[in-house]
Image (cartoon, rainbow, N blue to C red; front, side, top):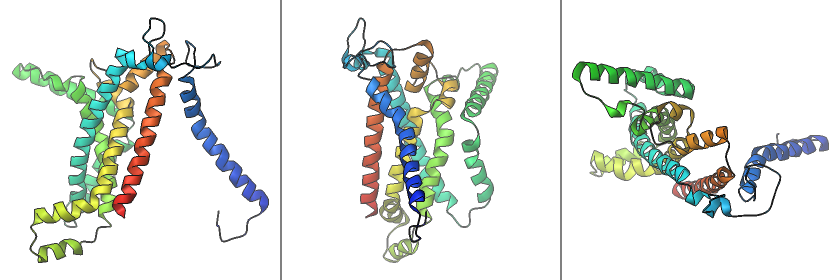
Length: 285
């Protein structure tokens, strides 16, 4: 819609109706899920049977709330541990990759950039299976040749980190590269002329300019890792992440404790996103 041109009343009404329908479609499932977290029912669905906090604080034996559910709490802890590790690795490597790809004299940049973004177009299921088969082949070869069993190459925490790192790093690199392209290189030249070393220029000028995108990339990496399911499903070991736990509970039948988990995640992620957006704007100012 072009604001400067006159529009008919029917067009404006249809446009507003489309916006309303779009946001109702987008948010109504989330709102219903959050409401059902307080439903005094043994099933995570309607009808409404009264208000309760048992799915958060219940100690059982009939209703076991989230804060007394050892399986889901362990899944949350595993997801946090995985997400923090992946976000740290992805941010460090993604920042270095962004510097590399923005070098004008970097040879084979186009080919390597294509290889870097390849994991983004590969379905997560295929990526997970490929990594599992690849690491399993290497593990068998090492064990048969040298008699050494490498635990990190079997389904485990570190294999999940490796699988998520393989595509999340690409996203972080693209976020940081987008801001780095707007960087005024004359600021670095001025700092060199004033006697600053290369390390001081990078630390005090370039990285300071990139700080909003680095924080944003780390936040996106954390969220993508925390909610990842497709790739993680094939690489997980004994300790399942939260998405895997939720999938198993929904498949086998669960109580509204999954709604309580969803409520906390929605509120936490929304708050985190708003804070990150506010912080990013402050940094740019």
